[in-house]
Length: 358
Image (cartoon, rainbow, N blue to C red; front, side):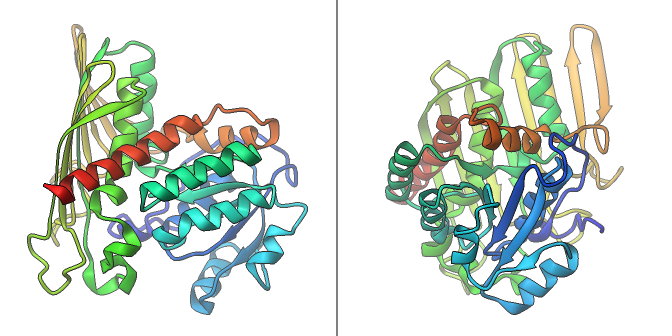
């Protein structure tokens, strides 16, 4: 199985994970394969020791491709078969974004935990409804914020910050270009009612990273903007967005998200993060080191001791997936707190609303 670094929609890191359970101890199923990120979600759970049981989708071609990749999966006759299956503890899903909340509500009412691709919601009303269901059912609504959880440099940056490598974080700058590949995208990709806007969608990744690296619980939105600069044939597409925020602990944040990765770029997006602290600076080059090496996952650390280039590709595990499995089994809250999961989505959607009203 190979990873296509040029195709962001189907980018599915393999990486490494410690198995936290024995075979058959944690069983999960997969439903709704509208976005290729489902492969990354499945990879992560399998590599942490999970056992894949059922898969369901409405599209026979997508279903066949998934089963070819994961031949152990049994095809479910319906989504209801998964919901009623007593063995399935968690349902992983990458549905069309505006459908994700209602699917999750069904999953949680069935007594199972839910692991959805980002963005987890397209409206603030969906968020409030899901919060109520989580409160009622005590089930987990987990989100695949892959740009941190499934990238070696991004994950290691967070670990270094926890260990005090750069002191107190003062600012996070996140640049997140993506390849449009317009001809390969489904119709819903260009329907804002389906994807919620560029800040709601890609922006949720970036806000989640900011909250994590800055150690923040909340933030004020200073500025937000969305545009369709270069795709008049797709009026529902936003191809550019930007946000400025100030965290509740004073840390500053700026992100730019866009669909302008050049055709000649070796990977789907030159994602970079610069984290400035009181005692040093971390730069993450998550996917490429332009004109030098691709794909890569690197950290550049500058502090009082000098400068370091740290190669993270293939050198880091992805602990989130094992932590999520153990949270499901032990009813703990270690992989990512529910409040953090929801706050990242909330702030990205609030930024989207501000941009639309400006």
